[in-house]
Length: 176
Ligand SMILES: O=P(O)(O)OC[C@H]1O[C@H](OP(=O)(O)OP(=O)(O)O)[C@H](O)[C@@H]1O
Ligand SMILES: O=c1cc[nH]c(=O)[nH]1
Image (cartoon, rainbow, N blue to C red):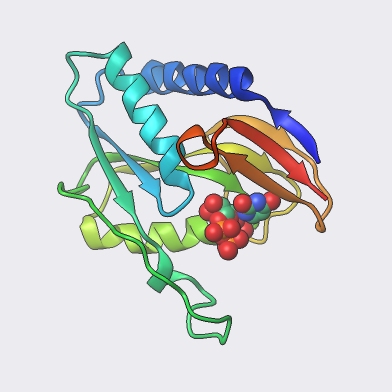
């Protein structure tokens, strides 16, 4: 097992990603954040709370999206899919949407998210923020606009993102 980001590095990376978002989206008047269930939510919660500290006067809209029923392997005999909650209490019509997930690998989760998101309106634009980009693993033409760390990994390896509130510590590891 190899550490990709320790707790301190993870915190600095999240701060940096938030500053990059502010650089492009200023007060988030026309921009909404959407974290992807289940694992992207820990990251999107951190990003949302950091942005609120950095921009105390901004009214940042933040929702959580479950993509279970939009997966391209849903009903493909891959076992029982357990859905999570979607909570988006605003329209994304004509808004700039920032999708947030912890790991970008084949790109299929994000494809599903693009599909699922359309139930909430037609956005003006969509950007993707991924904490870890496993490049050269993509099966679809999907790339992140904001990246915490880009890594190369063997197909047999797995990136695991650990969070204090769930796992007792913040760390990103590569598991053989
Ligand atoms: O780019 P992709 O290949 O879709 O992988 C990325 C997804 O994988 C992880 O979730 P999880 O392990 O729950 O998803 P999986 O079962 O699709 O690997 C991670 O939280 C991403 O959402
Ligand atoms: O390495 C990977 C690939 C997909 N999803 C993960 O969470 N980790």
